[in-house]
Image 1 (tube, rainbow, N blue to C red):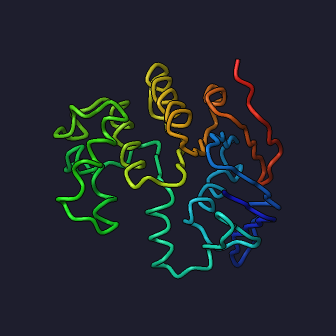
Image 2: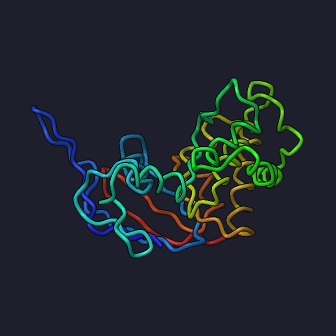
Length: 228
């Protein structure tokens, strides 16, 4: 599904050149749940921005289902991001003034659907994350775990080819983190969702099928995670 071939990324200023990603080769099949792990400054955020078509300035080749989409126009890339990738962030990134329903609906409206076409899909997504009864609530009326579930429903709404979850449990307590990771695992196992889980937390890794460790811009480990 995804092939990164000899990816190198540099940040250049007048004073210096920073080599942020170093000869990254990464292959991912549909249905994998991959933990991308590394300390702050390791390059994992840059790697994820590359995977999510956010950062397209790099050396090397990124093939998605055999096609190089990075050479596309900005308009096409925006469409690709909206349709192919679902993003879940540590701070939920919900719109406070919108209801849960409206937050989840938003990507559908961006992709051109009318209000009358969205209801069934929004409610199905909310049911998947166990929040069908919270559709008319606002984010501030929900717990942190519930807000993250809304963010996951929003990420799923366009039926993306893969999800990128960037430290999705970073703002949650231990019990809630466990619930959210079980939800991701369920989506992976039952729905076949392909998930990249960016984390620095070793407790997240056992929920995944594979671990990719990155340090100083290079992949230092890539191995299957054995379920206990």
